[in-house]
Image (cartoon, rainbow over all chains, first blue to last red; front, side):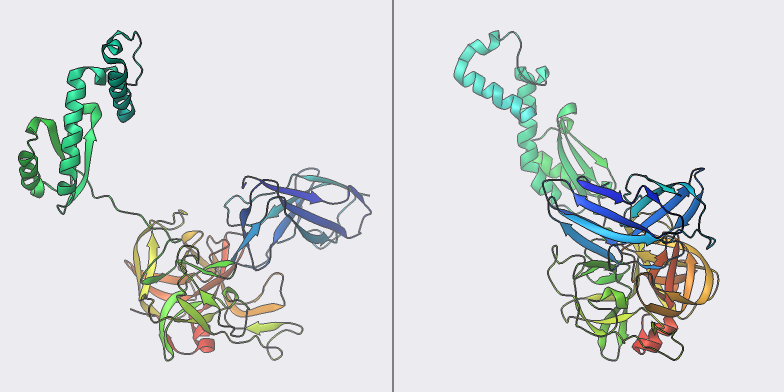
Length: 127
Length: 343
């Protein structure tokens, strides 16, 4: 990951089954110098992957999505933070609302890197 | 390091005179150099090298000259033995004994360019820059309006419509010359075959008219070291010998981020929704091959024989990093007018 770049996924710890879950990805430059991010798409784009307690993937935000392969150069000043938002209606890949239980959420920022940066896993309980 | 050691020794001799010889632990990396014989020899080699190097390097076929301290000699690299006698004449004239230099045959050292470097004349498959974005130069063409290149509509300041986007290659920071200006980018249409609430086109393409001073190579695509290896080093070129739609088999692309990718066509004439927009690209082709941000605009082609290729279209997007989507060349022509991309 680019030195100084920080990613933090913000989401509720507990949600009611069937309710839309809001996600925020905070992308920050924690260094004391400016840095350039190379982001895929006309606008900054991030993926979200939700897995169940057994590690099976139940939903991926960009599953099958076709994204323009343009690269945006985004200069970030020291200390600057970019907030990206998305949501999940709790419907899995099959279209059904997922069962109550524990889920892990990972957010990935799309860049030109073969191994794009991701935020640490976030635990969500659906009840 | 050797220079520092010699400098220290010289200072020592000037300041302390003979007291230097009594220093119990001489400072310096190489005790051998501090013997008078070693110093004399290395000094003579350094002087000879300084005198000989400009003359020797002036001979075509000389690769390098080196004061080879470790082996106490001057080493000269040449592409072939044919220039050996000319070098020997120079060394003889300077009084360098044959035992104090060696000539060895070595491959020429070439500067390797990548797809993200500057190319003049410009070549398809290399990096272009506009606004805050990077894309790939699709292909150079002849058009009734003049010499141009093709890239994506979304590789302009505004997707659909002409706003005279200015382009740099590879970056405005490394070369501030505007190489071309956007002159054609049809607007997206509603209704008809376009789904309700969407805007559509048959290709994600635009045309950029070259500045008079910018040289371009038509019919050439930069070729890297191999397909699907991720290498961006340019090692040759493909020749576009024909242009037309390809509906099956393996196709290739060359782009500034993932280089040369190759894979099978999996779907044709797919109406494709563009993520995060209300745009639908009609009748597009899907390929299982590598892609990533910055590859937009990549020329898509089928290899016909050797390095000869048939230009098939222009890449504009991808699903993940293993499936790319491109607009067939017939649909690019349908929207931009007649263009010739062949050599």
